Amino acid sequence: MIRIITHNEFKRVWYSPIAWILFSVALFVLGLLLLILLNNFYSEIQAKLVSLERAPGLTDLVIAPYLFWVAVVGVLIVPLFAVRSCTEERQQGANLLLSSAPISNIQIVLGKFFALALLAFIFTVVCSLFALILGYFTLIDYGKIAAACLGVFLFISSFSAAALFIANLTRTPIIATAAIIGMLLLFVMLYMSGSAASSRSELFLYLSNFPHLVDLLTGSIDTTHIAYFFLFIILFLWLSVRNLNQRRSL
Amino acid sequence: MTQETLLSVENLTRSFDGNKAIHNLNFDIHRGEVVALLGTNGAGKSTTLNVITGNLRPDTGKANICGFDVFTNPKQAKNNLGFLPETPPLYRELTVYEYLQFAARIHSVAIKQVKHSVDRVLAVCGLNTVQKKLIANLSKGFQQRVGIAQAIIHNPALVILDEPTIGLDPVQMQDIRVLLDELSNNHSVLLSTHMLTEAESTCDRVLIINQGSLLLDQALKDLEKSPGKRVKLRFHGGPSIEELNAISGCESVSCSQYGNFVCRYNDSDFIQQVQAQSLANNWQLYEIGPIASSLEQVFLDLVMRDSTPSPNI
Image (cartoon, rainbow over all chains, first blue to last red; front, side, top):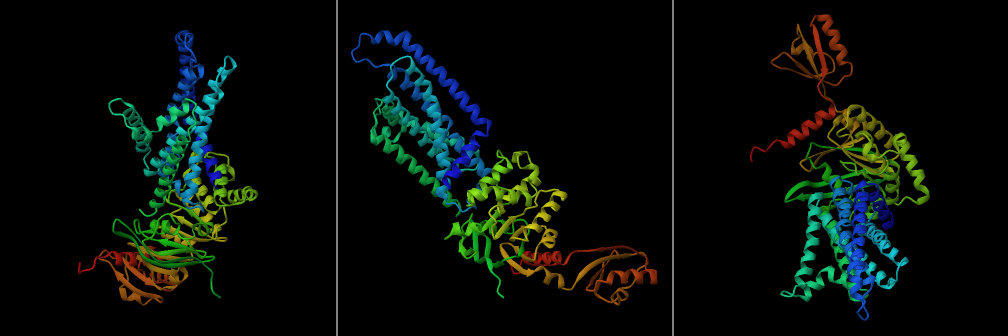
């Protein structure tokens, strides 16, 4: 049943021109960004690296920053489809199709989340292909790139789970969108505040998704980061199921 | 012979912010019945249906569908239920065929049976010509048909329809009524409406609800048997009340200050007799017309009586 809901949600995303426009713009912007990073590497950074022992390579100085931006653009786009999947559906009364069918709320939430995660996966794979093309011309560290891509995928998926919860709270798309952007900014603030010299806080850093992503972008697959993302996803999916259950009692 | 009970509602109560939307509802629906849930706007019809379909949790009481409690055994209960809410739950970006395929799959129709089920409801609901169209591009009448099609895609024993003709033009309404007639051949139907003609033309039994309480649960044929059809008569010449009372079949006569007579009668020949007497006695009858159907009378009597505040308040 989860697979059926995921398939339908995923299909509905691509039936809308919004998805094609958003992803086209994102790919264009990220392509330009990679070009700028490459140009900067060849014209300025490469010459300075010659004198260094064990100098970082193209993977660390171009691909990792590029994938960081893939993650940032990804969390600006993919969670917005949670609004379409939940808030708009509720606004139009279409949610009653699923809630009146012999399906549990857990299946509904998981079906919708996996559709967003699939979207995050495809976005990550397509964007990383840009970077992998560089491997045809020079040596790149595929292991590091795989770790970074895993980080990007988990990062976007975790925000998608949180967005799914927020999108279930309201039936007004604009409020849901504003709340999702607000949540993103909150996590950015946690990261900035936690990493600032004057107010350094390990707790803030741990709570924010960004430091966990940054570590994975360096190529180190730390199970604490993987566990963090999984716990983050499970927490918000559980809250979404609770919200759907409670809606029947309101 | 005992009839199989498909829906059993017991002591159902649901409040919103302390206001009781439905209060202590009790009724059953048996196999093969088409039942109308009648009430004015805000009477509690949609709340009742949302509780029965598991979309709202009741404060007290329970609803069983085919013997399964909607809240303790939701999957088994909902497998036997098809529901069309007030606003059809449609994915407007899908085509009719794709949408019905999805509806079939989430209602546990086996993959091999999906095509057969979709083809069946397309034919039953008259959607064959629009099956490849996007739902967003369909008229409201066709969207309503798609909503009904999703409710019967898994061939449920009980179909619940919440105001299926609301917002439709007269032609579309007539089409939906014909469709409801066809549905009643294979399903038990609970139909919520505030249109009495719709209930009279399609249903076997009526439930009248007002301010959340059930006021009447009676078979339509028993209501029709009840004496007291009414007709309005206007004459240029004019008989006396006694003369009209003397016509056979006449139960009572009243006369308004404008000279309109209202006769309550129980004989189907009464109208012909009035016309004949009018010609014979030169009463110059120039207007004759029914005042209200018996269901409308009952409905108005019950609702008006129930809504009248108590003098003690």
